[in-house]
Figure 1 (tube, rainbow, N blue to C red):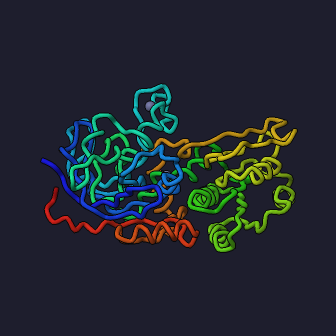
Figure 2: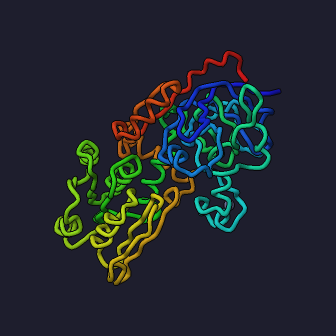
Figure 3: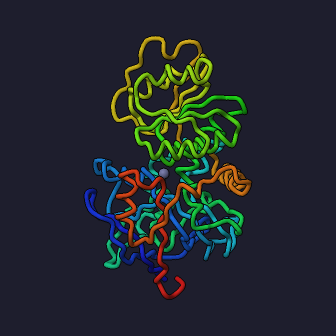
Length: 371
Ligand SMILES: [Zn+2]
Ligand SMILES: [Zn+2]
């Protein structure tokens, strides 16, 4: 029996989202669960679909920072039960060399599963009210919707006393920033870290580094975003001039780690110049142009790498982040503003202008019958 519910559909790369009825043709496969979405964060990658040069297929239901309650399971293989509270994260195959070595963010099938294709079993099952197939689910979820059918592999069970509707961004944006600090860098008390770009990913990195006892410096063009970074423990650096020298003066010769969320070649070179020998600069945004490196910037053991999803195993890092939140040391909820799903276009505008760090969409659950 088909499951019908409301979802925000994007039909053209320049168009607005529209909330309409969609249908899933059948119930969960043995490794899937159906989740009643409580909230879904909006991430830069959702909006990057518009500029993907048509590579991400439309029409589609986007949204990949969902959280909700399991309402149906495909069976015991899912290890989840009806009523479980879950945070949904990125999809991975579970079988390739990266997955079996604990690095699912570098899954051989990452692009296909999350951005361009989906699991083949799911490909034709998702349709609009007229029966026209929609793009395969996005990041294994498509959570700008009342319900999402997801592989149990990327649904992480969480403590039911937590504020479920706000937890979705722990599956991508906040996971990325915090994971870079806690997993990739393994920041310890006394380390110094510079964060370039104080958006959702950068601010999560600031919070995680502060929680880990590091000295954090934050760079951004927007004074309000820097004020937010300062509120969460960062030394704010205004303006773009002489950043590396300023960072070196403030940190006794340079930082051990830097995280760039801007993909700006100028800022990346400033970040490299601010590194101590053996320091590590992690990039999280996709480069849109070639990156000229100045002679000497990688000398003396300095390292530059691109990081995906904070090098995280979601089932390990998400419970760690909720525990930090419960201890008052990772106040990610303060970065969130909620919107009804109907106001998704306003949420996109506020995200683009930087007025809101992390919009979270709340589906209305107008669909009367339980699917
Ligand atoms: Zn894999
Ligand atoms: Zn994301």
